[in-house]
Image (cartoon, rainbow, N blue to C red; front, side):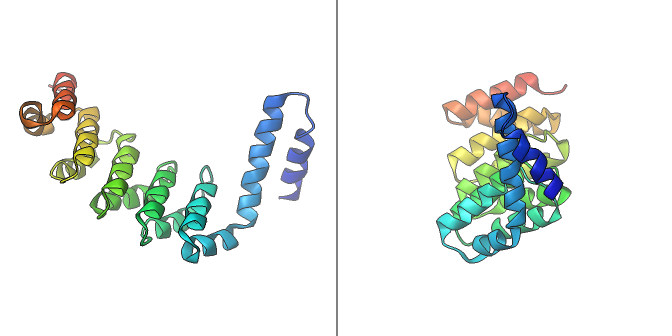
Length: 187
């Protein structure tokens, strides 16, 4: 770790501003990793703002310890902490993160569910279709709109009936999203 830090500290004096910015960002991540145990305690038992700051400090870092901390945060009593954890988890390419994001679709908070849909929609994975279809029954309009968009992005014909329903009976935004999905759907 010391050689990494030395290299990055030297790069802070580089003539190229982009190199200096990249080095500074990399140093910051190393410092977060060095404080990971302290940060994990803050996320677990600190005040809500400290928890959220701690979660976002992990953004861009990968590894089992990071995933573990974020998965615990995704079950925090505060919806704001859970939503932050889901947002940061979405940046990991980790199977465990995918599982946690899928579980977040059943969260009691519409905000957390919206974040989970946004995160999972990026995968465009047909295996997620069933989960998204269940979310189409949610009481929150924003959740349903995001789910329609996610289903449409998958483009699976199995969603045709649901998309026809929303194209006819949904609000203006839902109707537009469902019609777009119908037009792009696989035959």
